[in-house]
Picture 1 (tube, rainbow, N blue to C red):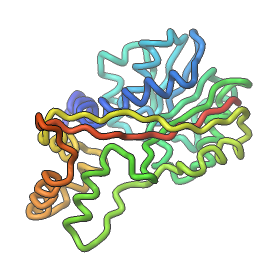
Picture 2: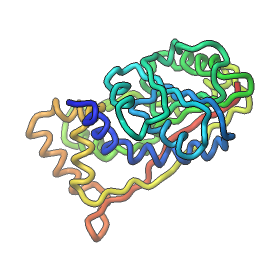
Picture 3: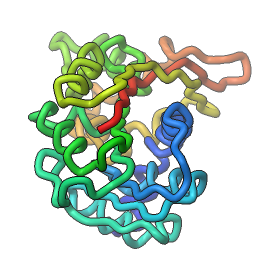
Picture 4: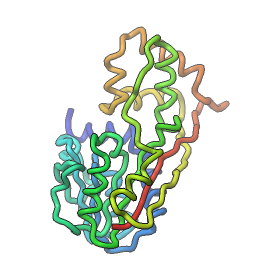
Length: 255
């Protein structure tokens, strides 16, 4: 798979939803212009793109532990002006107080030591700088892929644990324990829309994220069973389109 295909695959699957969340997330922060930003767990660069487009940053740096994601981000035209590198959230490769704003999207649930990651985000933020992150509200079953996982469970005798869950019930506590001030935790709600069943099915099964990887390991019979179950359970409109509410959790504070 080429780096262009890696970018396109992610964008078609998750990018269209993460962009909606990005905008609400950043609006809640009400950041000033000309800030130096760090995007922790940047993936292919979606959050950084929104920052560049709307907030006139002095600089944007994105790091991610996945080399393929970083190379895909570096090669995409929408990411011009963003500096990308490989890095781990639990050991950020920057000096103390290096950034005005340190943010992260859809990353924290994958980090083994979430407390250390948030402490690192605070460390590299200047005094009074913004520290904030968001992730899907998986623990209340309001993530964008919940209908797929429910259909999987409905068609197998073995319960499925789809992916790590963001610590939605303790993000605020983790931020406070890291020593951040004026900590807030909020929910972000938006509508997930699909033109038809194929518009839902293809991106969710043909990606290289956790859903796509799981799907490719399923038997042909189970794949067909899940597809047929979704015909029964997805909230179809009269025109064949699909729409449902999705939610994310965000936490923010100041270093």
